[in-house]
Image 1: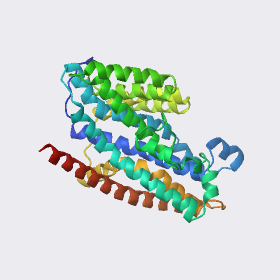
Image 2: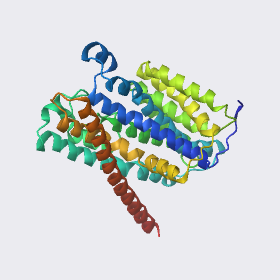
Image 3: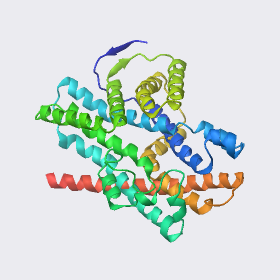
Image 4: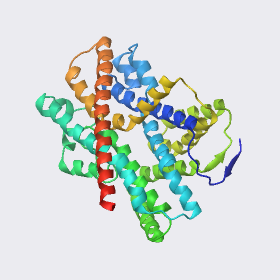
Length: 368
């Protein structure tokens, strides 16, 4: 394998793009199924030693235990697709205007984020007040959800300050990833911006990074992962055989899974590089119907990630909370949760796209 530093930012081929879509879907399944499994089953050690082995619980928890590592890899992927162009422009000294970059990030993330917070507020109100599941939300296996239903948490999440300066709003803990991605995009724009006032922006970005380093080491490690993704987009690589990059990816993922959060976050840069080699080493040519299905679910990754937890938790509290349930009940819950999350994600994406188009058209009209 030959790796050379040769900034040559080019469009991603259709084959590589499809490979990244497959990876994003796989990572999303790890996150969503991991959360569903944690609602249904005890942890693997407790299941074996205390709760008793179940023929569905052990394999389900065993193969969906990489949610943390998947979330970290989403940060690397964001750097690859968003920071890659910024990295190239920076190295080439090409001026970059904030008005050309920042709106794209805002239009990409903010509509989905805002709608996800609205869904969270409605769904949590239904669970806590309308359906009377307050005890399930107070004493959930994750945290005290009721104490996070405040205006401060809501405003902080709207401003993408989670989890650096504000905690989760309501039951939507997974939104921390979108918060980090938005923060890293802003810092990346500041540090990689060329042209007018570039040094001022770089100074502000460096001061911000050093300040956050004192309170959140995970933030800085994942920021490095974001930049690693941006840099890997600009590295010309002759990828090794798929089996080698795949084995490296699996080994790094396994090591990260049994490591501390900080070590796991640090390893995400290496596993992201292995994923890059995987995406570039093979061209997948599935039938057209399979390609359309992959594109469809990959385009739903943001909405699914943003709404799945509060919706699933409400269904769990309503259907299974406080009762002794069977394996058949667990399977029924998984099917129902999948269908409802999918339907709400479709609606969220449609509304987010509609809002995005409306804002963009209004901005265009204001410039005419």
